[in-house]
Structures are given as structure tokens and as C-alpha cells.
Length: 426
Image 1 (tube, rainbow, N blue to C red):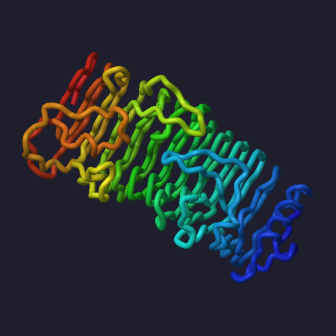
Image 2: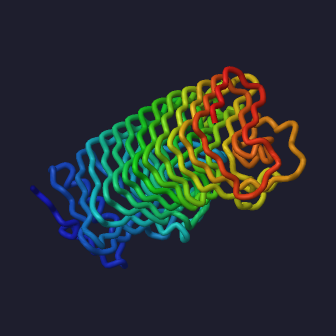
Image 3: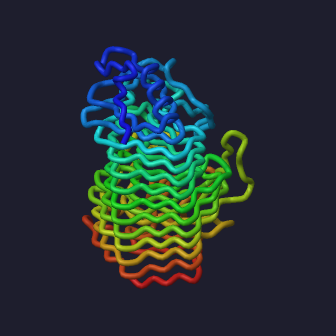
């Protein structure tokens, strides 16, 4: 096996020199000549690096790729418009229109996020329009924005990756965007924003996505589909995960921009000290991204969630947004379609939930519609149920859901509004 040390190309790895040119040269030559590039022990300061076809890059333990704290050294090969209208795409490590790549080893890539706060919010790693990519065993941390963005790509394997990303706003862990045949397994994620988020900022779908055996702690959602949702979502499988210290919802399925969600299976999830626990809702926001959008309204159907054990807490406040308190809500399951597009064929089975309870005010008669609002479970609070609230739905099946409440609560355990063909076998 032909392995070449990056230091043979002049990279210093002393934590002081700018190693960008030497690292890029090493990546280019090793990929062209079929060599494995070894990132040996040391700290390599760098700007954006572009990964090439057929690269095999291995990190030694104590090898660190470290972002230079200067926004001018970040670059992009393509851009898109995010949910708040900003042009995005710059990243420290860029895979663009490449294939057959493996990055592995016990080293680290750090983005020095606190020193790079900006409206541009560059990513740490961006896999863009690429295929047959494996990222394994590496540690990713301190991105100025989303840590790992997989966009318009296919056949991606993320395994045993550790992510710590809590030092800036919008610090998602892993975002799978308009991609297919993606596996995320054995990962440990601690993030300031959504931990694992499946989204579609283009008309391309997300399909055949598997998340398994991951640990997620986050200040917001642990696993989420949406909100950015122009393209469809199909065949999403999540299993054998632990969500802990989660303060914005455990499981969230919230397409609001015209996407259709079909065939989602979530099984064997433990939630500890978690808000939520399950929030499924469509809406009518229909936002465009880079002139890609839909006029049709989002639909959600064929969802199965089973074998959930959850210790649920009241959501903490996160300040104000849209003129209202953001985040504060009692825990409980919320399933809410719209008048025009009901939720269809959702099955919840075999759950043991410890819920906050504690509401003894007036029982609300009407819960506001999501409409064009940004969809969050706390925007429904309080709902008429202390356990499960179901609205605008057809074909809901509830079986073997055990609920206990930490405080007395005057509301019903299950409340249905505008539902049909529902089977509620608690």
C-alpha cells in the first residue's frame, strides 16, 4: 500500500504555519497517483481544501486540521439560499462533484467557530453533488455553522463520527439535504441546533436515508425532517438511538414548503431529559430556495414510530421570536395536519412515556393552525391533551402507549379534533 505523509509535501503541522497550499498539493497529487495521504500527528492551519476524486485520506491520532480564523480563506464551489435568505455554501472541507473517497482515522477537523461568526456562516464539511463517500472515525467540531452538510449527493456513509458543535448560532450536527442512499451510523453528536436534520432545499428528494445507533444531545431537535422542504422525503429509517439533554424536541417531522413525506420508520429510541417527544405537523409556508419551490401544500403519510422509552421534560424558554416566547411548552405528542391536507396512516406503538403534566388552567377550545408559521411544538401550547393531541388526521393508530405524568394535570390524556378512521388502543 502506497501511503505518503503530508509532511513530505512541505506541510509543517506546527500550529503556526499556513499549510493550505501544501495540504491542497498533497491532496491533488495523492489522488491523481493513487496514493493514500496520511495526515500525521500535528496541527495544520488551513483555509478551504477541495477533496479530489479517488482520495483516500487517513488521520493519525492527534492529527488536527484547524481552520484559520479569517473568513477570506473560506471558499465554495456552489451556493444555495438558506431559510433566512442568506447565500450559503462556503466550507473548510469541500467535496464538489467528486466520487470514490474515504476520509478516516482518529484525528480531528476543527472550524474555530467562535472566531468566525458571520452572516456567511461557513460550514465545516460540505459534501456537494458527490457520490460514493465514506467519512469514518473522525472528530468534527466548532463549525461556524452546520458541521456536516450532505447536499445533492448519493451513496454516502458516515460512520463512528464524533461531532461537537455548540459555539455559534445555527450549529446543526449533520444535515442531509436533497440526497439519497445515505447512512449515518454509530455517531455521537452534541450540537447547539438540530442534531440530525433531513431537509430538501432543492426540488431533489431525500430518499433511502438510514440513521442507526447514534447518540444525540442538542439545544434543539434531536432528529428532524424539515423545515426546509421543497423536495420530497421517502424511505427514512431511524433506529436504536439515544437522545439525551434535548431542549427542542426529540422526533420532529415538519415539512412546510410543498414536500411530500412518505414511508418513515422510527424504532427503538430512548429519550432522557428530552422535550417533545414527538411532533408531526405540516404547514403552508411554501418558501422558495434559490428560485426552487412548489405551489402544492405539504403532505405526510405512512409513518410508523415504535418502541420509544422517554423521560420528557418541560421545554425551556429560548427568548423571543416573532413576538412570542420561543420554546417554552409542556411535553406531549402532537400530530397535526392541516384542514386541506390531513395526516394519513400514522402508527404509534409500544411506548413508555414519562410526561411533565402540570397544567391546570382553562382547557383550550381551539388550537391555532400552523398556516405559514415556522412549525414548532411549543407554538401549539397549551393543547387540550396532556398526553397525545391529534388534529386534521385520517387513519391514526395508537397502540400500547403507557403514559405517566409527573404532576397533576386537568386535561384529557388523548384529544382528537377533526379526525377519521382512528384506532386508539392505549
